[in-house]
Length: 458
Image (cartoon, rainbow, N blue to C red; front, side):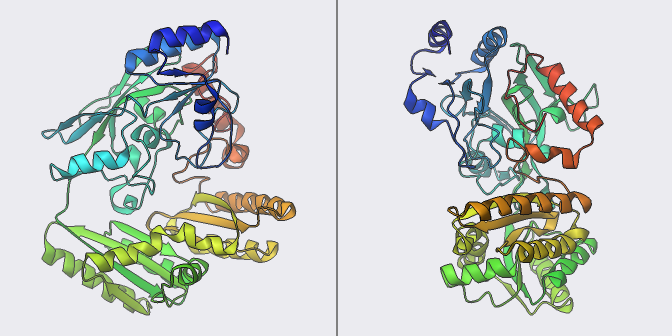
């Protein structure tokens, strides 16, 4: 970073918002991948005009820019792997600009924390459905850039289903608008759709218009226990095809259940597989009816038990198991290679069977849990961090899991994104023509390749 470049940024933003000291470099050098890459500096834009001026200058001087939300990503998308500037929105661009009660939308800046929008929307009996596990910490700009999902996805969908419009700054500093505050809009290409899940490689998001929904008045939680994971999967597929419409449908496999029992003494989990279910409705009578019908159905399908939480405490106890899976499975190893592969629901049993065979082949534990309602499995290859041979074998197992996933009609990532972690495997999922098309889209937006380059395998 040349001295004159630093001076330009300090004059533009002030010394407090243009930071080139080692403390800021280190603070913004990592994310949830636990990989470390020092940036040359960290900039905190105050508004969209700051972003435009920063990008225009960086484009002219070929300075790499890496947009960053809260740094909670699991794919390395917000890491400055080739140096350059981290463009962080957490300090200033973190405001909820509007809650539009007539059109049921929220207008926010990219640094708004997901949970803060949830809280604000609830004041008006509304809610924003996408609820990633990191929602108390992750930013909405990052959610859009990664097309984040969450536990409510089986009923309510994922981030892309709630982005109505956005504003963004191109690498040359030009500002664009994509989408409208309308339910219907078929004028022109779907530029907003292209920017969603682009992981900050095409443009910098500066404002988001997000759809809100009326908040259901009642919800209840239940847990179903099975002796066989295939039986549980078959039950889910048939329940959804029969019209049951749960908000959440999560699963825990045998290894995850055993870890929860050992780590947290959750001895009520007497099963080889568990399903955690949440349903909502505006009429309590309808909710109870639907949940009891689901109970009868799952018991007919072979569930050994189906317990409906009687109160909020029992519901929290059930959800404790799901929310603490990651902590529990550390009994199997102190290094975790975790992936968020997704397959069609009908292929879940085949996927888990294949993963079990790989665990036997490589002789380590691979506990699985996740969003069974939408086919999204969190696969965890558990290793010892001091065993280099085992780590090498673990990465081979991950590649085989990716190959199996693609063969079953699945995808490399359901919600974590590609970033740098899965970039080497993009050739497994896409042919040369498809990769070249993505590269050409990148070049059209960012001909000088300054914006989050070398991510996503393109």
